Length: 326
Image 1 (tube, rainbow, N blue to C red):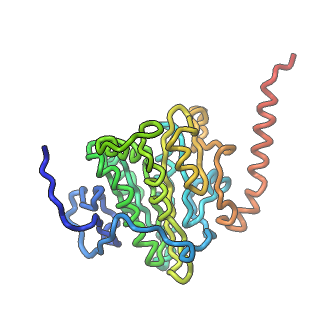
Image 2: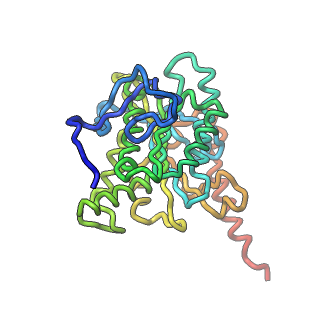
Image 3: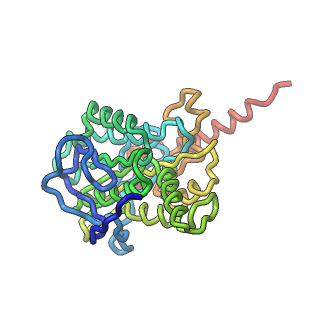
């Protein structure tokens, strides 16, 4: 029974450095009580991803500061690396640590091109969780180079559906102006649920797991916007770390398989490893980075070259050691 009015314009959000250190909702309106935004431009929420000619292959490392990630599943600037695992396995912790670990680089930076700006999109999370995250980032001194986009669980489904695209538009400002940005979508399974809710209310025919037929396109058009730009177009980059929550470790469900096929690799987290005290609880056998060593420094390559093989041999021997001796 709500009143609906048309604005007569296509959805756009504020973008620019004025947003750094702020918390905004899915439409880019500040929700942190620090007043309105000043000195910013506006960007369309839905734009086409860069074409093939405007791109360049990923070749610069994006240091997360986590040894397990930087050595075994290296991430490059402009890559899309999925963080996948059950609930309470430390998916968000990896993402937040990555933001916090950019602080050293930020303090040493001499120009805009040395800095990695961070955009964190919280979809369908509790307000208390978002408030806690803001506190962690401000205590760690990471809020000055971060933007938080929050569409909480109490927000309407269209806002939860829109928030990742809004965050992406904010990150694209840095990418298109020759700077580097990192965007974290936490998490895309909740966005898919919100989209399913909208589609069913609009009487669209449901498909597998009651998701609409275009749920693959929902995520592919979002993640394709993360790219490494060519030197002619400013050499900026937007790196994406989408998060997907699995149910009881089922990686073969509909949304996980979709997003795995779109991204350039995945970091798989396991409950069992987490409870054994191995944190980050990364399953090295299942985790891959398709960009691989192209995004690693030479020194890192030399140190970690044989590490995956040695770990595989260790797992083989560990499995063999479980046989009875009688």
